Image 1 (cartoon, rainbow, N blue to C red):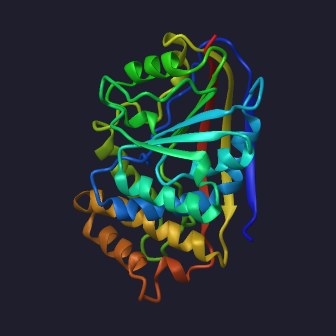
Image 2 (image 1 turned 60 degrees about the vertical axis):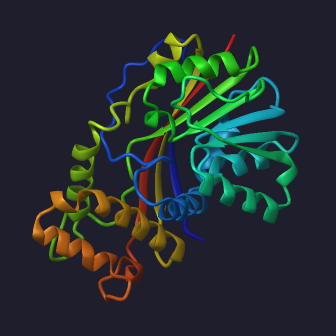
Image 3 (image 1 turned 60 degrees about the horizontal axis):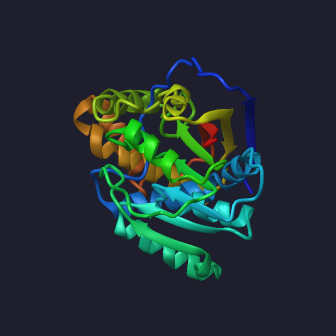
Length: 302
């Protein structure tokens, strides 16, 4: 098993936060490219970062264990299944715009024998009117809020939806994870950072709330911020087949949107890494790590 090194910074506060925004390529549940590829990446993300997700669910400052949870932008269910595992008496309403993501989530629920505890709802959360989600005790939104076209409206809707005293957990990330050493590949050292920089420049205009400090927006929507947690993950990936596939999927995804922004030399080097039949393939490397940072805001509706 790969070893995870997780650095935690936990802050309990009731005031707005003033943190420097993160700037990185975003990663979430709604993209303009094929859902199949994205589903596979989300499944690998859930597998590789399962320990980190479990640590977040265990940290949540809940007054009582929730019985009804809503997972907004659930993807293929990383949060859904972590929450079901953490709260064995709860049921989850999993909401996503992608029919394929929800289908995969339902199939996974059946394979785990928890299908009776999961209800899926296909919905576009950018619509002004949301479907009836009941009055959950806990709403979870991981890597989904920055995709909202009107996040202020979405936050107000969550506030209205939550049961009084309920908790809202927002998990956002600094960008796609990094995998390669800084001096890799040997002929184009620093390639991964240049690829991420190109992705960041392209996506800044599309997702202005990526990397935002959500504390002030949550406070403005009527929530009381009870805690903020920054998680830096450094996961050793040597000989881990899942991490190799995860790295390949993420970088293939980024390549599909930044190919025209890379130098010919960088594009050639990236394609060598992504060629699974090549001796230079990422899958053949034994020096991969998963390096990422995520921030969690836990806020309450009073």
